[in-house]
Length: 179
Image 1: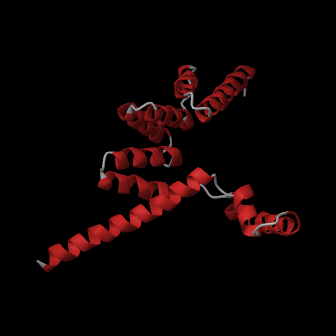
Image 2: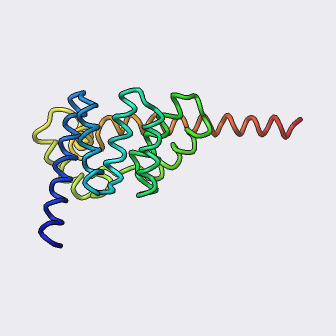
Image 3: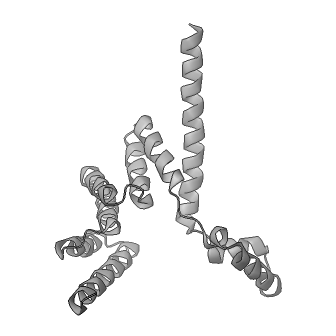
């Protein structure tokens, strides 16, 4: 890789980190500018488009959020954050069919926690937790090696939504078949 390519990649990473920090601080407009700068520099990163979408959503522009998420999916059709964002947008629009479609795809592409990827590391962390942590070692492992709380909450909601939607659609087809 050429030095110029490494430098532009480094700048894109710094812009992405800046965008994440600005987003976390609630400055969605500045975060949006950071993510847009990545694209302007010629980088087509699904994460940058997803970041643009999330910021647009937080700024109340669902149309632009949806377009950005779909752009990210053109780059990576399994991009978890974009699938998640589209499910959230369609939920807010009470579009259960599209919510179900994107929830289902997101659940298939949900990130694994470090504990799931490396059971040996999780067992080692449990052993350490037994000596250093006053709570349940499993809680410690989940907190240290698991998914972010936000993702765990969303995944829990998504599983419940999917079950309820499938139950409703099965009941409708049973009633339709019986008639």
